Image (cartoon, rainbow, N blue to C red; front, side, top):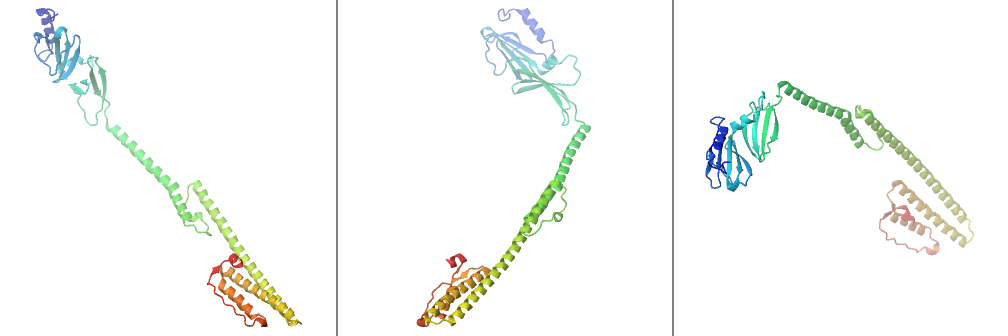
Length: 346
């Protein structure tokens, strides 16, 4: 109406009466035309205010209060400023007795309309936010929550202590019943030597039934290994005795054969027969040399010495050579090598 008829004094008077009803700290307003001429109210300016289109509304939090601008025709505008005390009075809930706090917000900006007292470290508060549907304005209302009292603190501390105690007891039980027995069992198995028997009693108490069964299993395995090694040792002793018996029998048989050959050689009537008996004798002597060195290698298990064996064979050939080969000479040039039985026989 003022925009169409700037001389409409009754309308301006009604507006001033409405805004001035709250006393000296009541809301203020100003209405200007497109040229900036004051049409009604008190002249004041808002920093950063821009020209608004018709019907466009802008709200801004400034100087502990709220300004609202609305655009009119031809660049005219109306601006109202509401102090925080006025907004607090308007927003106070009817019949609301408990203490409360109010904050007006827009984006990251906010102003406190009513502060909630008693915001100590142990005080709690509950808040609710309401959107005002006015250019992004919001109203946050806070009321005191249930206080953190001494019984609540004691109860919380007791719960924490109970949790810590339960964790410590659980760790102690696990350490006693599981970890320590497993460590002792691991040390015993790590120090095990073939032939020994793992004794469960020497590992200390094992409360867990499963760990006890595991220890008994290791003990059974060690007993089995000990029995197998004992059987192998007994078998080796028997095999050694049998080998020695076979060696003595072969040695005796070779000696008997050599004696029979000598006996028949002395009764030979011709030189050809004596030569034949001498050849057989050399072969039997060679077998005796090889057999003796072969048995010695089995006893010492260090390899057959080729130089000594071939030297004995050569010496035996020279000693039993016929009269026609009395000038026989044998020269040996052999490295002192040690070979196994298969290589020596080959």
